[in-house]
Image 1 (spheres, rainbow, N blue to C red):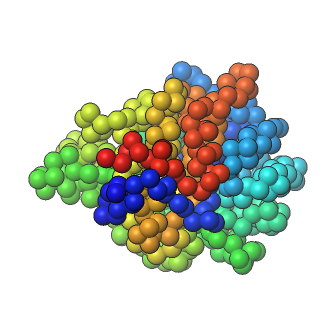
Image 2: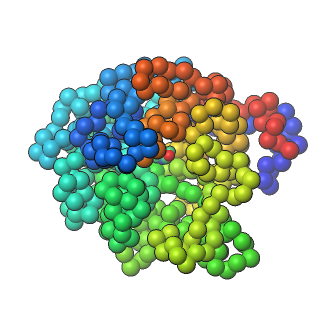
Image 3: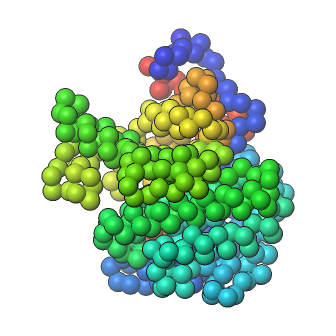
Length: 441
Ligand code: IFM
């Protein structure tokens, strides 16, 4: 017998996933398309000191012209699902201009996925904003949600022929923090007040998008991708560490999701009450990467008085991206299950240039997914981040998340060994005993 939490699995038996489980990968427009000239990230990349090593997204992975090449690889790797995003600034490059050709290209891409037996999940906002929107105040404007809703109204009908699984926003809390509080992303804001203001607009934008998609496509499933991170007290005996870890958990993990479930942000009830957001989530999108230990620190008000660090001696991924902590995925799935909706793991992965940890990462995390499913948690799919190495925001090209290595200068593709391990799992819908054995004891 192998023990998995409270469960026991007979020795030598593979972990069998449900037959309709979605096996895929995730990407986002700006990170892979190339030449997204009209958004705030492109402008940000041109400013000295913003991106590690002065990197720029440039041609990225050349998806605008050749995404199909990588869809072929995904299909060959037995993937049956892909989460990608549409770039608002391509579709609406100016307030009064809609680019039909860009919409046509997205139709082509979604069609290409379908032709290869890959079900698309479409994200409507993944970190980037049209320059015209950003220049007028972006998500701090009172009409930001309304402007986003106009975009959604326009883009969903032509894509609805190919997609009925929608993610309104990607990681809204983390995005608002990086854009408005820590200032490492555009527009470089440094105030909690600005971050919370943006969050309220994002919640309204999400709620509006949810309703629009359902009006246009009643059978659609609509959610958003919530960034989940585990925050464990550095010293479990310290009430201060415990309180701070709990506050970070409430804000990072639950603020937005509470908003979409009950229309109220329990972490900060006085800020973001958006009653119309209640009940606007058909599934919980789980993005999970790592966990922090948290110690009370009076000097860090922007971090809710917590100093976060990686557990000493724990296995880590490249570039101080954090601890590799598979059980954390099980724990966040338990949290996600509190919302009583189907769950998609919309992102999970690690930067690992040498690919010497990715295979184990995938197997050990899927083992925890299986454990959750067998305890009755309704996980419907897993999207590994990412199919290809891509432009990793402020870290530029320095972090390699791809199952497939990409040289952005030559656009050469080299599947990493972990791509075959994941392909074997996707193809059979099982994790074999041989792969599990090393984690079992
Ligand atoms: O690359 C990002 C993605 O855009 C959002 N979630 C985390 C990924 C890895 O950092």
